[in-house]
Image (cartoon, rainbow, N blue to C red; front, side):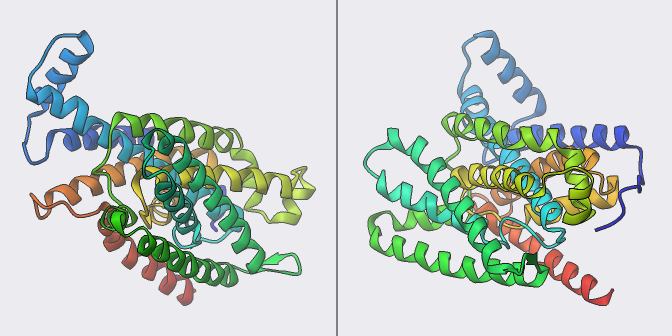
Length: 341
């Protein structure tokens, strides 16, 4: 991790630019699709709906189909970026990410169990799936940390190896569940690859409270996150209750990961790439890094989802494939860069 005192660029200018990029990405995400619309059409449709005026097919397309999808993409991207930022701070490991640590796989397994158990009861699904995803994410994180710990120390390489190993085991269990629930296999396979095609306002209502609950405490604890970069011992000497703080932050990161997985399946590498890129732009101080990562992660996933819809239209590819294509080379670059130091 880099030193905290580096502030490469004007922070207000960076945040203003990130907000402008996110707003533009969301407008483009709503406007483009199988039926392209102009920015004026989108704004007019939103105006008519919010004023209570009746509209036509374009209003339904904008307000009921594309807008909830874009909002969910932004919330999922922000959740994954925040979770990656927290894991990298807590473990002081630049390669930590919900996907690589196996936390996403744990959330996926928990959500999969809930999905199959509530196959005939859709009403229960909106409560059971997030709960299952959160339980799976939290238990997986605890298991990975236990496996990677030796004499009270957490080695970065052991953490990654434990995460990969646990992820493989959970993937095997998930595949077994899909085989048992054969009548739902195609839907479950598509969900596991990461996709937003089922987005609706009900899913927005599902993920929004989880996101708010998960991000509130980290945003109020940026000073403590900075202390964690100094090491457990020094952070303790400076008055931080390290173990209690870690548990709280791991619970918050698991909730954010579960929120993302519950509505979109497994989407990798957003939590790895975004904090790294933002750290190079705004520096490692979490008072700046966390808000910047939230905005950037939201933009990355909105644009990735747009690419997933447009690259080989009318066929839509899962957005998890797009982020994997972008994130895989980035992960390899990080490994090579770390080895050359």
